[in-house]
Image (cartoon, rainbow, N blue to C red):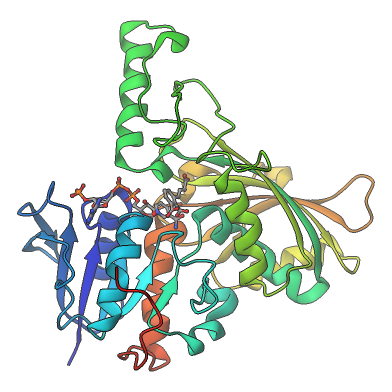
Length: 358
Ligand code: NAP
Ligand code: 3JN
């Protein structure tokens, strides 16, 4: 007997990639159910060449579901994930809603799969920017320890959903085809749907992803700080992030500076990263080999290069980290969590419901 797998948010930028990742998955799957809001209910999507009608998400949607992948925003997970657990499903949630809940493991399988053992029905998938940084840094942390991380991101617009992709494509066409000055392009979505002002992304770089918090960092930046500490199980690692949106459609790039606890020889750092599952070393500057967003699109791996010593700090190292934000950053990490749960015999109903039914 195989599993019944539900995808909540199946019509979105992440949800459509989840369907592809399930098509390619090693999970034994009998049935896939696709869920959305009333806007897309009734629409037909394909799974392995088979037509599947998208259903409206309700509290009763999860009867008979073994694994539910959620990617429809935090409020949808807050409302419906507990009903999925109550119905006997294991939820892999791709939103931030449960990430800091102490009853919820926050998992990048290559880094902390062991955290799955204690799950209570919901497992959180970290933010895309955190995930790729974890894959690059865990092999370094394991061998030399980590004192601090300073990261600047160069994030693709697909991280902000299908509407941001559409907005970027429209703006680029207006500038390139119609000769509109990028300053005069009308923006409705970016930098962030929930804030007061919107700015063009075409030919621009926006140092705002999500809204600002009280300390002048954005939520995206604070996610990187808090999620790193939880995944690496070490509150003492200092993490400061600057998150920037650039007019790339897919794959996030990151300039990462770290200070290790012990001095780490650069060639050994490269070897440790090259040997780590999910990480690919692309570092040969003599031949101009380094990770690039265009090459990472469609891959599940995280590409790491430009690894070099800081010019002044003995324990300082710089690197460039690139990964497909919709795959390892979201859909693949979620399906990989489901595969890992299956391999460990952890796809099972939860006896005690620890999450509030709203
Ligand atoms: P998107 O392209 O805007 O898609 C949103 C999806 O959610 C659509 O399928 C939409 O269905 C569905 N939805 C919206 N409201 C709903 C409701 N009330 N009930 C059921 N379904 C509903 O967004 P996306 O880029 O795929 O991202 C979706 C969510 O994934 C984000 O909000 C975020 O929480 C999470 N995410 C996480 C990461 C990460 O870093 N791990 C990255 C990106 C996104 P309709 O077609 O019916 O509108
Ligand atoms: O902007 C990006 O590149 C990543 C965005 C992720 C995102 C977008 C909307 C809501 C998230 C997330 O996963 O942290 C959320 C959210 O669930 O808070």
